[in-house]
Every structure is written in structure tokens, then in C-alpha cells.
Image (cartoon, rainbow, N blue to C red; front, top):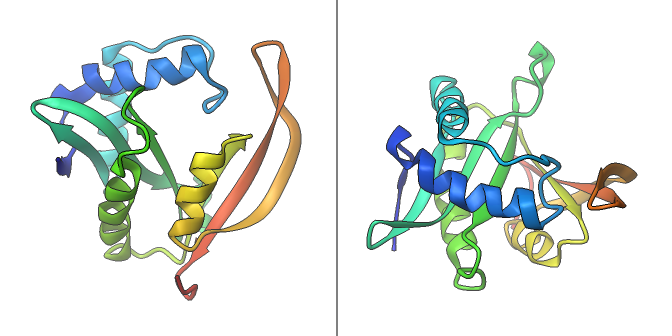
Length: 166
């Protein structure tokens, strides 16, 4: 498996991965699938702002992706990043998320960030395990803030600070 920076030509496969979660999971609060052009725009936005966007590839097939972006746009948040990771349906449990996050955090460590934040729609034991494996700690829990598939969904936030130890 090769971990590499995302390219705009990856947008179609990234859409395949993400649209599965839109249609079959509460992991994202988007409801309608997105197209390749929209995903390309999102990839460009991340890269144009100097943030890492990585893909895991095996035999020309993307198995997952991870990226970081500014946590919020107001200037005082400039030292806080938010991360996301998605794995192709059927490829879970193979260490792809771990491999992506190892490289993502290596790239983030070279940037000027003090805090890295991850929002997790609950329940999601696999995502919680992944984040806590990297030293994230749960810092917030918002009850019933999303509504999808006819039910209310909680969201937890996990944080990793520069001075935190694994």
C-alpha cells in the first residue's frame, strides 16, 4: 500500500469512498451524494490552503483518504486543525486508517498547529479507537445535534494538543 498526496485526478475514487458514507452511514451529516467536480473543489481547497490531503492506494485503487483543514476560519483559531479519515467500504480493519493518520500527523507536525481536533458522529467505536490510539482525548459531547436516517445523532469531539504525549 502506498500513502501519497491526493491529486485532482483522485476525485472520482474519493467520491466513491465518501458517497458510501453519505448514503449508508451517519459518519457524515451530508445527505446527498457529491459529484467529482465538488470533490475536486474540496481537494483543491485543502491543498490551496497548505494542508495535507493524503490517499492510500493499492494497485491503482484508493482504499482510503485523510486530510487536515483549518478548524475554524476566525484568526484566533489559526493554530487549530481538524482532521478527517475515510476508508473504502470493505477495506476496514486492515490498518489503512492508522497508516494514513501516521503520515497525516507527520505532515501536520511540520505546520504551525497547537491543537488537532476530530469530530466523531456517535456511535463510532472504530473512529474513537483510531483517534485515541494517536493520543486524542474526548473533550466534548453534543447530544442530538444531527438528524439523519430518521434519528437524532450525537457528536463527540476529540483533541490532541502539541504538548500531549502518546
